[in-house]
Length: 266
Image 1 (cartoon, rainbow, N blue to C red):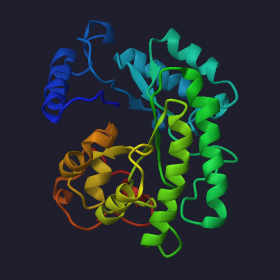
Image 2 (cartoon, rainbow, N blue to C red):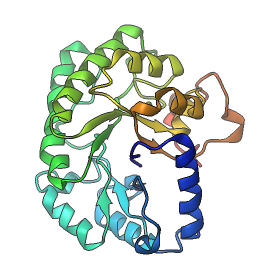
Image 3 (cartoon, one colour):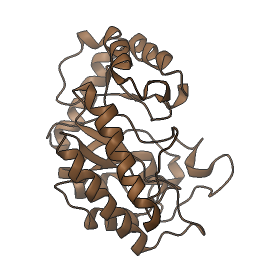
Image 4 (cartoon, helix red, strand yellow):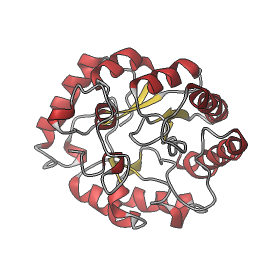
């Protein structure tokens, strides 16, 4: 969800009021009090059937949706057709993530591949996100970890340089760039997250803070929100197993069906 310059206390009060007003999605979006930021749900569970995801949002009274690029692969060359479907259901696209789809590079650590990564991301924003007219940020994952799994500081800085360039171009289109620290991605730990934020230009790069992934990556989500609140453009709001909260190590498997924390979210 994208916030609109509110304080942490206002955020907590508004979330509480939103939950009470809706009665766990019982009220329609139209009957809820106006909010200073937007709520949306992910379309990841529907695969390429984003049409059903939109219908589900409308049925539950959710005002927004955040698909991945892989969810909208059938609309990559025709974003306004997807917008028409959303408009008919009174659902807005909060943003569209960069994950998946053909001919798209998400390598942020290999200097020989970063140039295409930059070009692909800028093109996606320009040709797919901007036509919606109301998206104000681009939430994006940072690709896989390098061979051997451990990310080094030089690779984080290569990533930061790439993000600065993407963000420099997208902010000119009115879109804030919002990288998402994510377990089993290039940036997953406290050190990696803080080095990335330190190495990126706040004029061009913001942050998508995911409460589950920050926890699974060994961080305290509230501390990250406190430290970077002026740069937080979106929060992914979900839980993680209680015994992992406050852990200082990455606790999820590196491979297998639960790699990246899948099945650990609450």
